[in-house]
Length: 243
Image (cartoon, rainbow, N blue to C red):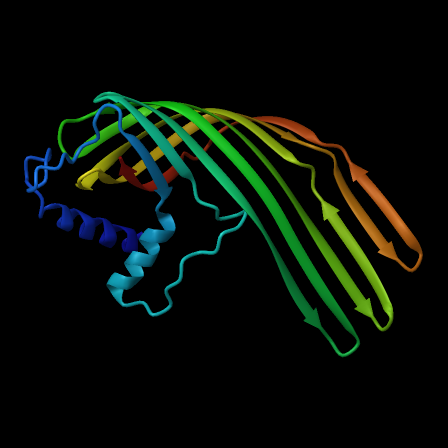
């Protein structure tokens, strides 16, 4: 958290080099988005951590890898006027990893893989006349995800394999978001927002398959359906570019 605050402060300081009316730069370039502008935004959480490490001299400084559990959101906007925009948000994550281990008499290899895809559509209301803009509005979303874990155990010439495939997950949601954008440079902003919503979650049938010298055994378990009202608001920090 401290790293994020330091980087936001640095961006704020950089923004002071522009004209203080908050509307145009010293070269006359509009700072705020205008009707007809398009925007693209990125989840800036990893970038903020990276920049914070640079500011405090941390030598262990890497951006997080891309995968199902840490894929960042990408957003797009169409500015209608000073007070309204349409937005779309997307998330695509996929990855696989293998962790081997061994002893004098056996070896175990665990391979995990996953995929998820999500998209959301919403209406963004905007308020503010200076560099700091308030944003809020409703969103609707849908997401789909799968994952599996395969464990291969080798003892001598015997190889046993267990594959666990949880049911595919589908989530339908509606939410309301609220936040702010600070324009630290012409048509460039750093945003922070929270959202709170209701979701319908559908989990398909799961399967466990075991292969060994005795043959192949398969066990299945029923899926489930649930409705959840978020107990903890979701948060997002974004870096946005308008064109």
